[in-house]
Image (cartoon, rainbow, N blue to C red):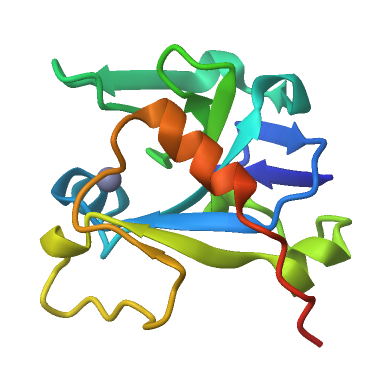
Length: 158
Ligand SMILES: [Zn+2]
Ligand SMILES: [Zn+2]
């Protein structure tokens, strides 16, 4: 289980699942959306996700291609959103609160996949030897979700 919130705490949510597989997307859109080098996120089943508060504080911007950015109306912080037409939610990991009662998250969660390595900013250092490094995207969103979910859990770090 883990809980997260936006900057102003208007939007809060909860994930009832063990999360250990994270990915980073270094594409030009994620650079702008995050205002940084990449988005670090995970994907969870919609059935394991729920809003605790502030769903009505969320607004979104969508690109014609389907990329969408959902964010808090008050503080502009990106927030989770349903992944296109899949039964999954996208969870930006920076929103997870440190007091979350999930020791497995602290010990086991690691970035396992890097997307759009070809588009990365010149100052962006990608950790070498990550199992999955893609120049662009995986074939399609369904195969990406399957790929991420099938990665074996790594031994916990102490
Ligand atoms: Zn907010
Ligand atoms: Zn991206």
